Length: 115
Image 1: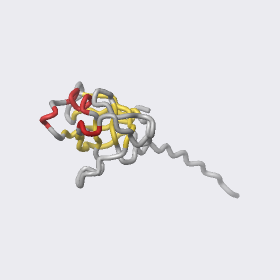
Image 2 (image 1 turned 180 degrees about the vertical axis):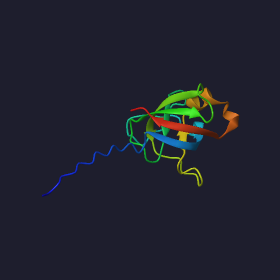
Image 3 (image 1 turned 60 degrees about the horizontal axis):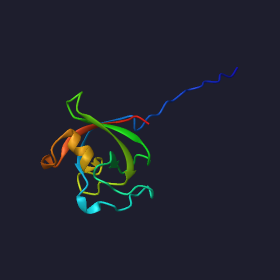
Image 4 (image 1 turned 135 degrees about the horizontal axis):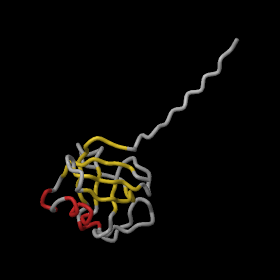
């Protein structure tokens, strides 16, 4: 007698990531085409770069330890490429400003993929 066993595995590798470092794009990238091939960087747009999330992903970026300080961004570019920040996220300056002042430079944030 044989038995068939079905195992249903739900994989959500990007659903939520632990605390990562967030930085922001420098103004020298304004009007440059992003890696998605469609979007030109504009510091006022709610966009971001991530090394592995698919282009078009909508991500909630929340200040670590806060339930009320967050921003929702669209992944349109690849990066960051700074040593030590490979698992982080680069935000547009406008998105970063919604979380903290630019002078902060780097923030610890939690990422949640919404779509």
